[in-house]
Structures are given as structure tokens and as C-alpha cells.
Amino acid sequence: MEKVQEQTAEVFENDIVLYLKLFCEEQAIEDMSKESQSKWNAALMYIKKHVFADNSILKISKHLDGYTNNNYTDNRSNINYSNCNAYDIDKVDGICNIYIYMC
Image (cartoon, helix red, strand yellow):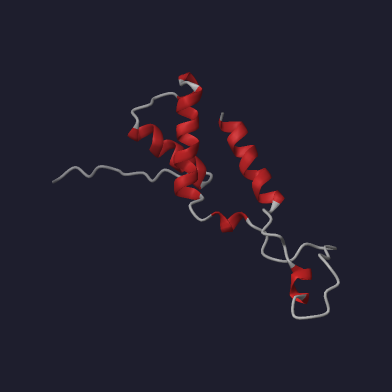
């Protein structure tokens, strides 16, 4: 009878933590807390490349409340409902909090 090895799946709080672990494995880093700032910068760039390759997921998807660009009455009137390609502050703040906690 063959011995069956038990495999466990590692669960991550979010993709940022997952890609930090993958970065550490690829770079043979055992403890990031002992690494230099340049290693942390490289890790954060690695995470950005994999998790936020398309930064449009961090943008506001609706027009800004209370924002009126102009009072155009011609075919440019749709600019009044622009979101100015702005980032969603809550999403960006959440990401910053994760980065601060990790670093």
C-alpha cells in the first residue's frame, strides 16, 4: 500500500500577499524584514506588475458627485459628467494600508 502525502493549499488574505510570497521564493528571500529598501521596492514593483497590470481597476467608474466641468450646451455637454480619469480614493487607501502594514 502506498503512502499518500497530504497536500495543503495555502490561503492568502489578498493577491498582494500572494505575490510578495512568490517574489520571496523567486529571489530566495527567507525574511523580508531583514532586506534592504531596494529589495522592498523591487518587491512592490513585482506586485504592481502582477496585481495591478491594468490600473483601470483602481479608477472611479462613475462621474464625480457634484462635479460640473462647464455649462456647455452643445455636443460637449457630456464632459460635465467626466470623472477626470480619477482614482478611487478608497481603493488606493486600502492598497496603501496593506503596503504600510507589510513594510
